[in-house]
Image 1 (cartoon, rainbow, N blue to C red):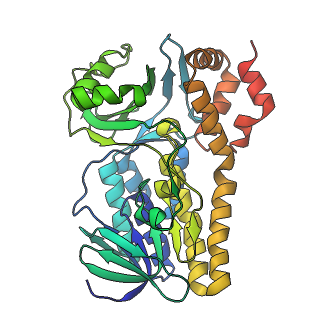
Image 2 (tube, rainbow, N blue to C red):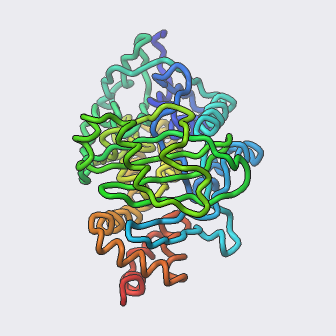
Image 3 (spheres, rainbow, N blue to C red):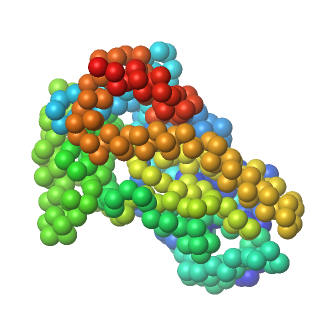
Length: 405
């Protein structure tokens, strides 16, 4: 790689990185995306999302025909507790709105990469970033890569919860939740078309998501807490997965026996799940997607948050490039504040959900009341799906209506 100075270098070619590249390139900004994987490969990641993610993808520029190919409609997500409660969350579709979806991540990620390239961005695959020298304000950031050195006026970390940009900026912190592992893969779906419900099943020490996706497949995602770590080390992922799936109570609409279904791809893992940052931007650097902080995949809205972060970052990066010194730093500060305003209430809701998950008795109590109270259940679904302001989920009146006997 030569040693030019580009306007923006984006580290990470996942959905957040390529979506941001597309938005910046459309504004005439010279942007290069560096992705260490030479070709797309399945890795642990979310596939279920509420209608809010589809709306964000439309804003970013994916055509309706492309969205139909990358997403499969899911009319409801059923949250199931160990004692048999089943809370059916529709995310507003039962009131006439669009449904939640399950994404084919290969197709979605590829479509966003194509969108970035069509907008004028350069995507360099097979290029890993091995080190950074962040700008101190008087020159560009230097990126050491597996193909030489690149200089950029601004560097963006879109490289997940172990972001090299966040680490170099000294803002990365471990999650406040106990370390958890995520395992995910696909199995064949004997009902390759149509809209079918997904399941989110609480198991001892974790939970399992079962969601239909395009291509005649079902995605299986398992999140396990620290109590499972020793068994994962001694037994291996496949044996633990078999035990977890065997513990799931069969449902009348199950398309397959989960513990016997043949895998379509390898089991991909991620550990530890989650992470946080003390800031999302600073002089000459920005963080988007999971690199900007990730709590837990339980609510299924990591992708939506990632896309919103790219939209907010695009405007801030453009402003930072137009100015120097204090004005450029002000653009970074504005992005950090905008992300806080946008997601502070949702983060509180997520912590509230974690409180329930940590107490089986409290979870069962709340689930039974959600199951029986349609209006409260509808509000919870809209809040979890980022379809209404998340402040409604922490409003004392809502909590009273949820928890009263």
